[in-house]
Length: 180
Image: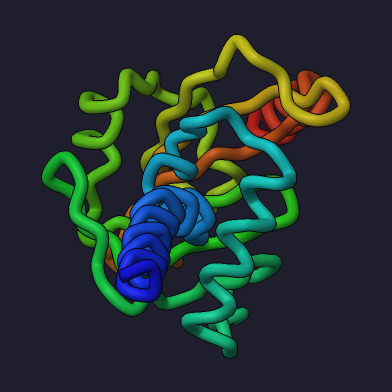
């Protein structure tokens, strides 16, 4: 009888341990993939850790990005992202930000949806239509953080929605060059 009782206790104990351990396994699961679309909207605001996480995710799915856009690496995502009536399957990394290439020339629609205002210039001809909004929070080193939507001939029927860092000095310098 005691042998049978011992086996029963062992079985009950093993079951209790496995039930108790189940939540720990769930907690130890890897974090979900970063939200690339929200990153392009600066949600949450830009951080180096966030950009590294998204870059590593993109690099794992597309080890050979398109680098034909001057100074940018464009990674193709394995599946399209659909959000708020917009679609993207490409994430863009530049030294000062992260963005997505939205299907179509939809800068006006993006501006309306995400409360962006018209930009004064056209980035020396690189942008035919551009909108942006400054965030109140600052980035690394006190950088200004902008959400922008821009389209132009170089984007070939797509619109860049991006979270980017800049400075007051860079904005003023660009405005001066636009005037000339």
